[in-house]
Image (cartoon, rainbow, N blue to C red; front, side, top):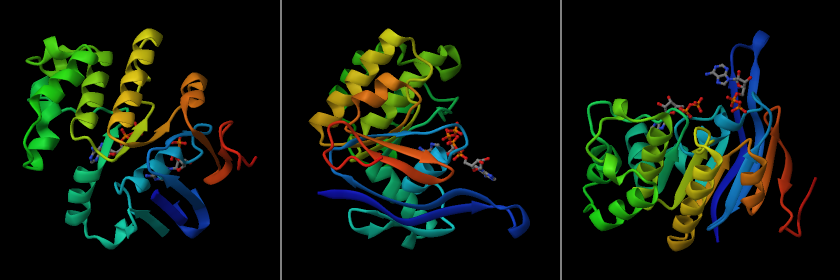
Length: 232
Ligand code: ADP
Ligand code: ADP
């Protein structure tokens, strides 16, 4: 079943004389449960695309449709609630709240939604990520890798149907990276989650069901080795 679709999606910055077409007519369609890697050189438009897919940034033109709903028809408040319910973000800037400890940071999105915190589930994720013993620490007391794993735990804790990730393991050594990727894949499988991940890492791209290559704001490749409809 299709979970997400973009239609003629565009994001242009600047004035007519000096226009940057960061995303310029992107049409992609993503199935529930797919793991999609987004690749492309720096400045090709990957982050801009991911932000619009997640409703963090409004397009200049075009649509993002999630579960059949054009998300940009919602006002900012409705969109924020929709994001919190549906989407887990794992970004490079971890956006941890400095005055809250690790446990509070991870359970914050659940608390906001007034759903009951599944403490065993959260503990389990934290255990697997090796940060449960850091639950009382503040973000400033953690290493970069521990902060990254806290942000990953926070994104998984709400069991979102879509996970959007921008180089989620960029700060981890390769052993930890493999462990974190395995955990993400396990979560995705158990909860039928869809994952869309920007990566420069060949090994991670190879784990994906499909690779979408962005160049100059447009889709230049959309497929994978496992995909019979691979186009290049
Ligand atoms: P990537 O994630 O692939 O590195 P980005 O989506 O960050 O690429 O950027 C795509 C293009 O859009 C770049 O040329 C970048 O400079 C430009 N861009 C991104 N954000 C802004 C902004 N807020 N204002 C102006 N230009 C921007
Ligand atoms: P970059 O990829 O360029 O390092 P990020 O993708 O981490 O930047 O963040 C881009 C923007 O998205 C920032 O303004 C940040 O505050 C916002 N952002 C990141 N995560 C969330 C979230 N979970 N909810 C709302 N906004 C977020």
